[in-house]
Length: 238
Image (cartoon, rainbow, N blue to C red; front, side, top):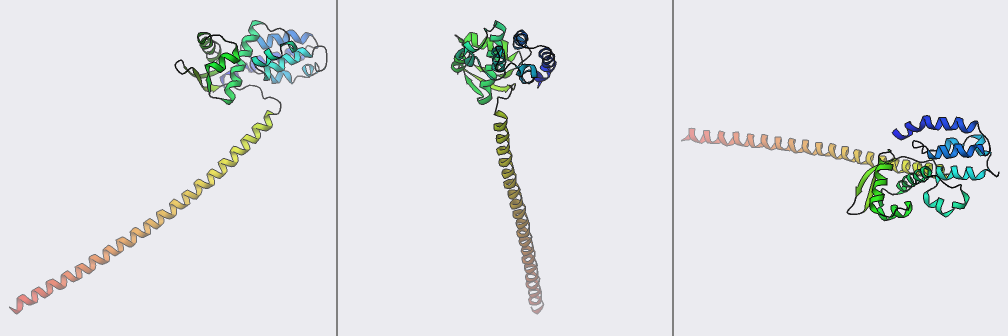
């Protein structure tokens, strides 16, 4: 939550910036936004009308670059580098940070081999320095590095912009989770009723046992009194 709160003002700043620009002038604003150290969400900027107007124009390359930072990864850039403007070093760093967030969406244990491949990192020291200095200290992720087993265990990762079509998938996932929770709740309630029933039966059984014990005690007491009465009678006869 901290990182979302931090970038709220930055988002507002850039939304105002792009709202006041058009066409090729937006390119430099996009570079500034995608290089900013505190900005990791771009959907609000993409939603600005002047940005959407770039679609299908000679300046659409700038729109594609912004979409890359909203939804893409470093691997996406490498595969389609001809579609985008040349990235400056701060943009490269930002895109690699965003790549870690994307990987953490689906897996909580990220192997060093996978991370090194996705981030174009050549050695473990460089990878760990990047994860610690550029991801953990930035508040993007929290987790544990295991040098022996060569993996990064993710405990928290900031969220990225929703990709087109992802909202429907999330709603379906939440609906499935809700249905499962409802079924689990019914099962728990049934078990509580069963436990209550068994408790009542146990109480009833215990009461029956106690009553039986009392009856036996009374019977023994009566018989004991009769035995003592007979003994006294025998003594008197002697």
